[in-house]
Image 1 (cartoon, rainbow, N blue to C red):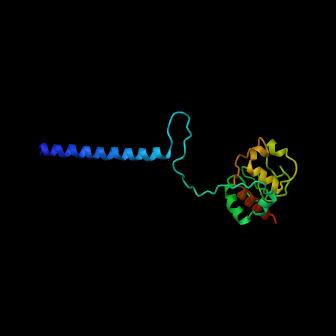
Image 2 (tube, rainbow, N blue to C red):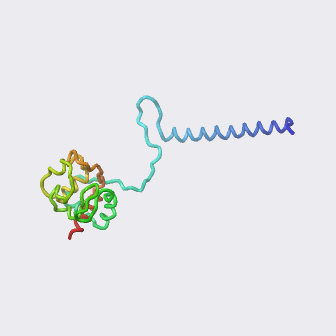
Image 3 (cartoon, helix red, strand yellow):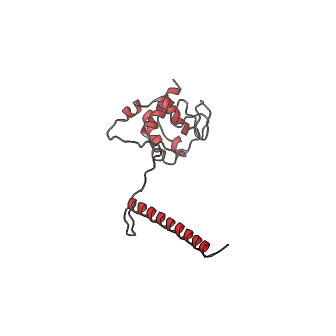
Length: 172
């Protein structure tokens, strides 16, 4: 059964498979090296492929008044964006979740949600939650009120405006 010809065929098949593997490896390295510079001397590495996640990048226009951004907010879109907030906030008046209820938050005094224990960072703030204040808070809660328990920020300005329009539409 194992004669010289069979052994030669097996060796040839092994060498052919090895050759195909090495050629594939060489082609992959060539493609990789063409797309990413290499070296150990602090050279900047460029991303080889861009993966589209479907998320839109925020385009920040310098000098656009916040009133214009807030006026462009759509309550119908804000309802969808608010799903990100539902993990911690409820919309029913007086029913708190991890965060305070948000029914009537636009125009409500800061730290005034019934039966909610605010952190000192938010409890000590004075004034009402105007759309501009909410916008700044949603952009960066830690910078607006250092020490706040809220860490989630909406990075997209259009989403912030949409959520504010939605929250403002809830309490007539």
